[in-house]
Structure formats: structure tokens, C-alpha cells
Amino acid sequence: MKIRSYEVFSVDLPLNEGYRIANQTIASARNVLLRVESDDGVNGFGGAAPANNEGGESDESCLAALDGPLRELTLGTDVLADPAPFAVHALRLAADFPAARAALDMALWDLAARKAGVPLVKFWGGKPKPLPTSVTIGVCGVAETLAAARDWVAQGFHIIKVKIGEDVSLDVERLRKMREALGSEVLLRVDGNQGYSLEDAKTLLRETDDLELEMLEQPLDARDLEGMRSLREESRVPIIADEAAGTIEECAQIVDLGAAHGINIKLMKCGGPSGAQIIHDHADAAGLSLMLGCNDETRISIAAAAHLGLAMPGLLYADLDGHMDLVRDPASGGFEVRDGCLHVGDQPGLGVEVTL
Image (cartoon, rainbow, N blue to C red; front, side):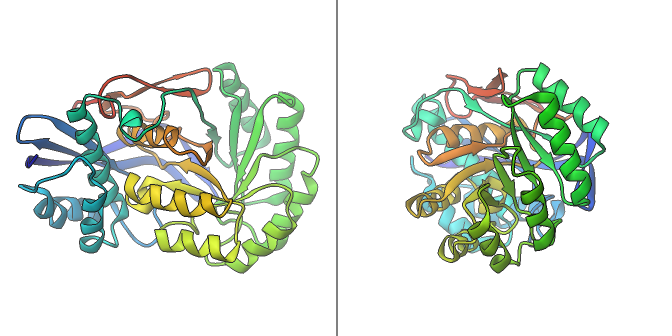
């Protein structure tokens, strides 16, 4: 099976409502989309959303990698039913551009599953079933937090992730008011996005000890693995590494140091499904919890993460809401959102259609 066509598109994606994380406001996103076509006319789609990646991958450098060396690597190449070995070649060629590699990796997996005539989750040996996901509330005031939380619950979601990290006293107040308003049926996750000091993180955990937080994601600077390890040793709430867990090597270091209870795997950080599977296998064998997260992304890459998550035995958490606030999504299909869960379809591959 040879790749005869390879097209790259950059799309600007304004958000319906901008949001704030620790020390940053986000109002729009840019994704880079990829379509590959085999010599018998079957298409595969991939998407890159590099904007929030650590390490310097920009929208422009992602586009340049996809439209340059990765294009040259792929066009005319025989791609086997298992694209994982091809991902190794892409890593050697574009090591500093994981989102670009993610788009290519998922497009080739999509193509392979479409040619096989099965949904990608089945191609990977998993089974379609509802995948519960959290939805996210940015850093904001108490009243705005409560209004957003009630709106999500009214839409059927029962896992809410709250962005924190700028003011620990306000964060504690927001979380306490949320628990009072929503009761014990709603799971609360918190994400510090590196905004806290170690003492702030300990304060948050102490002051919210009775709120039954489901997890605390990346409270400290990504470079402070010793602080993360110290916090993990003391905390009853699972500590999940995100910004500190980008590459396969960084995730291995977290596992080896015991710097977290779990790892948030993002396709944009690790280079796609092939890299995510390596991280999963290593971390799961060591007893860490696995989470699948996202940036602001189209349905293409959210579908890829959902199919992958359903094929990962060690997956405990999903945070796959990155498509929900897009004013316009060039992709359709792939999954439905019902009762706070993603439901993948039975169409071959990712099941997405793309209009550009």
C-alpha cells in the first residue's frame, strides 16, 4: 500500500468562550490537518494542535515539519498494516515536532483501519463502549465557576476539571462552593498547570481534604520532579503529571523517580498513538494510573484519542473535551457525546469526515 497523495491544511479555530489557565488566557487555537491517500483511493486523516506543547513546537514549525521532511518521508512509501515502525522513522526525522508526528501517525492508523474495514478501536483489539470524560472550567471567580459547573451538569456531565493555580485561597473557595452546590455525585478534578509552589499545593490539599478531589494535575513547575515526588508521597489525592510528562523519555523518568501517581498522555506531546502506547505499557507495568488528555483540537484527534483509550487496559481517566468550544470544527462524525461520555461509531477507521 503506497501513499500517493499527502495534503496539509492549517486552520484557525476561534473558541466560543475563551478561558484562563494559570498565567495564560486562551481565546483561539490553530490546528494543522493532514489527509493521506493510498494508491487504491482510501483516505486517512490526522490533526495536530501544538500550541500548548512544552519544548517550543509552534504552529509554524509544526506546519513546516508536516509539509517538509515528513511529507518527503511519506509520499510514495509502502505503509504496512502496522504503522508503528513508521513512527520510529518519523521520530528520527522530526524529534522536536511531536504534534506534527502525531498527525501523521494517526492518519496512517486511520488509513490502515479503513482499509481493514473496521473501527480503529477494534483494529487495536479494543471494544466500543461509553468513555466518560471530564469537561473543563477555566480560572475564574466563584459565581462564574458555579454557573459553568451547573450548566455542564445540566448537559449530563458528571466529571468536572477545574483550572487552578493563580490564587490558592480563591481556588479553595471555588472548590468548596462547587462541592456544596453539586453534591457528592459529581467528580471534581483540579489542574494547576504548573501555577503553584510546593507549599501552595500542600495548602490546597490540606484545605480541601474533605472534598474528595479525584486528582490534582501538574501543580508544580514541570522541572520540579523532586517537589512532585515529595507531594506524591504525602498526598491522598492522586498527583498526575502533565507538562512534566511530554516525551517518552520524560514519562519514563517520572515512572523511575516515582514523581507522580499517574501520567496524562496527550497525543500532541508524545507523537501520536504509537508513542502513547509505549508510555502506557511502561507506566501501567509500574502501577501508575493513565489519563488521556488533549489541547484545543478538532474531532479528528479527539476521535483518535477516544479510540485509543478504549483499547488501553490501563486507562483510568479521560479528559477529551478539546473540541467542544470550537466555533467551527472542520471534522464531523467519529463519535457522539451523550450522558457525559464519548461513544465512538462503527464506521471504519476514525469514522470522521473532513470539510476544508
